Length: 407
Image (cartoon, rainbow, N blue to C red; front, top):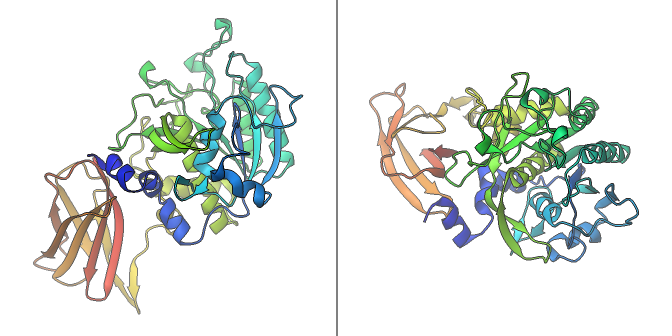
C-alpha cells in the first residue's frame, strides 16, 4: 500500500492533515477561533443535519448565509453538495469521520455558483457575495469556483484575459484582497489543457490560488497551472486534492478529487495561523505561507511555492537551544529526489536517526556517525518510496524532528 492507503487504513484523514501540519496546529491549540471564514460555492445541503457540523449550530458559529443565485431562499442548506464537501475540509469536527483545521472559526455561507448553467452572471454573484461577507467582517474567503469557458462561447476567456485585470470576478477578488481579506481560490481542474490552464479569479493579484498534489506528492494531472496572461506565477501553493477525505451531504465520510478540495485545506491552515498571529496583515500571512512551502527557493508554475506547513509558517527556521548553546539543524535536500539525505545536527560525532512513515511505522532506526562535527551526517534512501515521512534526531538531551517529502 502507498502512504495514503496506509493512512486511510489507520485514521482516514491523517495524511491530508499531517501534510500541511494541521495536526501540529491543533496540538498547539490553534483551531481558527476568532477568525471568520466565508465559503462561496454551489450549495450546502446537509450542513444543518450532519453530526460533523453540529458544533457550528450549537456554538452559533454561522454568522450569516445568503443565496445570490436564488435570492428568495432564506437558507443555503440545499442545492449542490459541492459546498458541503468544501466546508467540511475547513470546519468538520467529528473524530470518527473528519477533523479539519479550523472547526472553531465563524462562518458565512454563500451560494454564488449555478451548477446547471455557466454564464458570467455567476461572476457578479461572487462579487455581491464578497460585499456581503465584507459587511459581516470576513477575514478569509474560500472560493472553490472558477470561470474560463461558458455555455455561450462568446463569453469564453482567453489566456490573455486571465491577466488579473479583465474578468469581473478577478477584479472583485483583487478589491477584496486590497481591503485585507485573504482570498483562497482553487486554481482550476484544466490541467490537461496544457500551459496556462488556470481559471478566474485565480489570476487575481494579492490572493492565494491553490493547486493539487497526489498521495505521492506529485502534481495531480487535473491541477491547472500558470502562468497568468501577464506572466505571473500560479498557483501559489498546493495541498492534497487527489481524493482527500471529506463529508457528504448525508453526513457520511467520502472522498473526491479536485483543486476545489485542496484550497479549503489551505484556508483552514491560514485561519489557524491568523488565530496564532492576529497582528499579521493579510500580506504578511501570505508571505509566511509561501516561505513555509516546500519549494520556496525554487517555485514553478506547476506547484507554485509548494506544500505549506504550519510549524514553518508560524516559527520559521528555528534552532534548538539548550541554555546558551545552539544546536545546528538542517535537513537537505527537502523535498528529496535523490537517494542520499544530508543532515547537520548537533556538535558530536554520533546521533540517533529515525525515519517514520505517516502510519507510525519505523522504517529506519540507526546510529549515525561522522568524522567531525562540521561534516553532515549522510543517510541512504534507496528503497524508500515517495511520500511524506517524519525524521527524528537525538544527541544526548538534544532532540529535533521534521517532516521530509520524498519524491
